[in-house]
Length: 275
Ligand SMILES: [Zn+2]
Image (tube, rainbow, N blue to C red; front, side):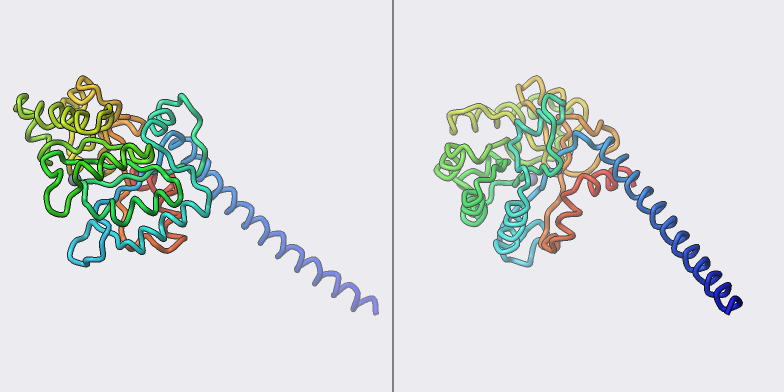
């Protein structure tokens, strides 16, 4: 009897030890994961995940598109999970630490001024009352498949859509930067065209294909832009540089809720930046 009790007692000890080891490992793992998240949070505190869209249509022929259904699902995701979807002025306020950024903050941008944004994107944004920034190439206004002044004015006047400048002819700006007259056309004249057409200030510039350098950033600042948007992470500019605001390319593959959550979390942007 005594023998039996000792054995079961020893067995209980072994079980408890195993359980303790397991709990220890689990706690250590959680601590590591938590530290990584906290570290990234501290490092990327002022980074707003800015989503980059182009065309909203169902044609599989181009890579820079999402279908209207996918766009609707992605916006529904942001709405249902109570994301803080912000205007560009807010992005700047967060990046310059004038305001504290709520954790689940995101901004929406769409480049090149496709008409399908008005047809498919704008109604969904209106439905959810979510702001977005539209970057317009002024030479393309009113051209086939592109937005005209009527749509641009309507969206701009709604207060929901901020119209930004995407240059006059969509060139690779770093090669243009040697020609100051041409740079003025692309960055200053285009701004004036938009301001005249919309009857309001145009405060944001988006570099075509994300191409910029220090000279271009300076030029944009002097032209009166409050900020500049690019595409890819770029280690030559600081993460809180308001003239090099990074964006995340959105595609139809980013529709799964978990992938979408990961992509628009600050962690994805940070890891992409530092990999
Ligand atoms: Zn573009």
